Structures are given as structure tokens and as C-alpha cells.
Image (cartoon, rainbow, N blue to C red; front, side, top):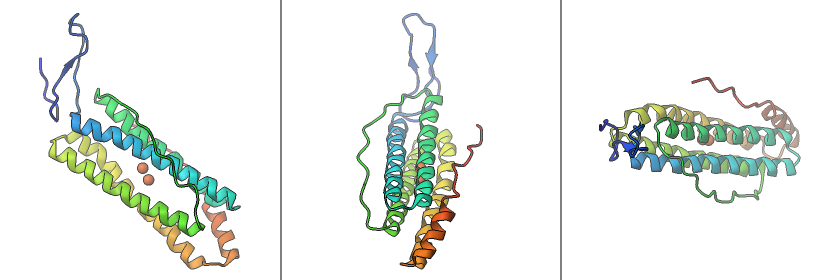
Length: 194
Ligand SMILES: [Fe+2]
Ligand SMILES: [Fe+2]
């Protein structure tokens, strides 16, 4: 029996010989491929932010480092959302190689400017993925991706806020010290179930 699914793939017999089990694949090849790529992109984000955390530690800014460490953990959660969604659709997760992160930065401001630029790129990736799901008539993926569309607004806002604050701080070390204490309050947000 063929069951309707988005994209160019409809169903696959995983155990046709014995006629026992037919896995219905609810994700088309193109969206599956793009989601696998996005798992890699989110894990690269986690790696990049961990590298930024390490730089902040080396600059004696433990609060900035904590903020980046929490950001890195959130990116891992994002990767796992894609991972689980592909599996929920009976798709195949195929992990890819991750490029090395940037490791040297000129200043805390440069770190957060690069973080903001990075998030803008990720926003474009999410929008491309959403556009693909629309073209493929993949409604489940569109609904899934809406969370990420909203999340990217938050991501750009948060990084942009720190960039603006750091510009105001300038070279005032007392203000930098206070900002470091404030950013150090950040913890990884609890993920809602489901
Ligand atoms: Fe992300
Ligand atoms: Fe992000």
C-alpha cells in the first residue's frame, strides 16, 4: 500500500521479504536532506559558541563565558529537535562533519558581533528550509519549523542587545565588570515537554 507523504518519496518496505512491517516515511528526500544539513549547522553553532566561551574564559570574563556556554547548550538542543523530528517522520539521520570554529577574537565586542552575524545566517537557513517545506507541500515540517522561525527572532534580539550594551560600555572596565556579572546569570532554559 502506498500512503501519501510529502516530497518525491512515498513509502518504503523495510522488511518486504517477510511482509511484516512497512515503515511509512513522512518526509521527502529534499526536506530530509536539508534537515540533516541543519542538524550539522546547529551543532556547528554549538561548537562556535563553545569556542567563544573558551575565549571569554581566557579574557577573565567568566560571566560572558557562562552566557556563551548556555548558548552552546541551547544549540545542541536545537540540533536534537531536528534529529528527533527526522526520526519521528521515519526518516534517516545521517550526521556530517563539522568545520572548526573561529578561535581568536579581538575583543568581547567582536565576539558578540560575530555571534549576531552568525545568527543572521542561521535565520536565513531556517527561512530557506521553511521555503523548501512550502514548495514540497510538507505541512508537518512547516509547523515544526515555525518554532525555529520565532526562536531566530529571539536569538538575533539577544545577541544584538549585548552588542549594543558593549558599545555603550566602550573601554570602561567597571561597566564591563558589571555586564560580566549580569551575563553570568544566564542559565539554560528548561525545554517544554512535547
Ligand atoms: Fe539554533
Ligand atoms: Fe542560535
